[in-house]
Length: 445
Image 1 (cartoon, helix red, strand yellow):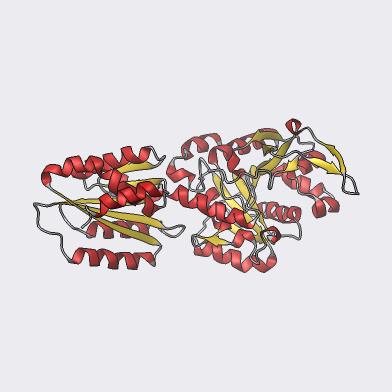
Image 2: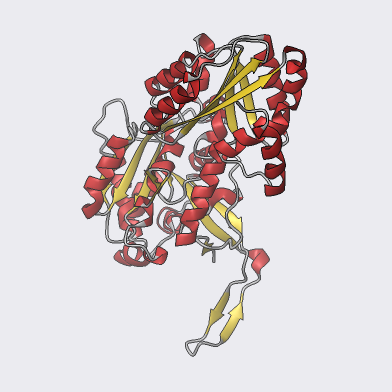
């Protein structure tokens, strides 16, 4: 007896090691592709009404950061090159809404199909749709991954394990330790007995099956299974004799079930998006020194910084990662550098799925010509325009004497880096922030 783990972890949320964005590009897609060398498709049942959230809008369509929850889940699978197609089964009355989401956020591998009146009926419709693929380039998959539309945090390495085990065993599923003891009650509401928690596990998503196993299981199952069942692994065992391989999953597998879970998911997404940035130096030594100082500083905060001279050639790979950008200008006030970043971001549709932060750090010396009075106004106007395109621009101007410039760079992270992190979204203790403010204001033009 396994218990479905929809709400078995009261201490959620757990932070994903690989988020929907594959932790800002750190996930090794090539390694996964070498392992998964067979066709894999995904079915996302999304026909629920979301009664437990207490909201009028089904939770899979609730939005934060400008996107519905289901779009984050879809993006997680689309970011994995070895996933060939995704079928979303939604209630008939939400088909137009789902089609609009697919088009608006340019989801490439997805199509929507009408769901059913129950979970199993929706999954069955999705599986049948995979066997009727209209696109010639997408054939019938070897393995079908079934996942909840409201579980946006998908780790690629773990999904690879599920897919491989499903191919070898016919079925595989994620499990997690039970947090609470499971008890049975009498009809009068008294304790009947309790289960020994160490012997049982919570059944989670994702689950994987060979196409033949899951399609045959649904062809053979009863009306009672369709109406009241919830466990796909049980269908594979009962109707196909396929005993699933169970793999313990990471704590990030939790499901958005209640209203508070939506806020938790938003918080995790915001923090994850703030953990990586690309520093563009223009190849100038002083800017490189500044970038190195920033990288050492943020390393203690579990934030990744990549340093490049520009976004040309091989460096354009940074545009494909879910990173923010810091443009460092030394001894000249040139907004064209920032404008070039905006053009490159728009060309890659980077701001379509979530906000992108661009920070312009202008470093000048006291022995140089004063900064143009037009610069603050120009950066403000540029930021106002970019905001409508989901790009947030911040400007920091710093002025130091030539003698002190290099030593000041080594201390900049104490002042400016904290403000940069605050702009991006990382929390800094209020006492430290106040101390930084006093020093920082004296250094900003």
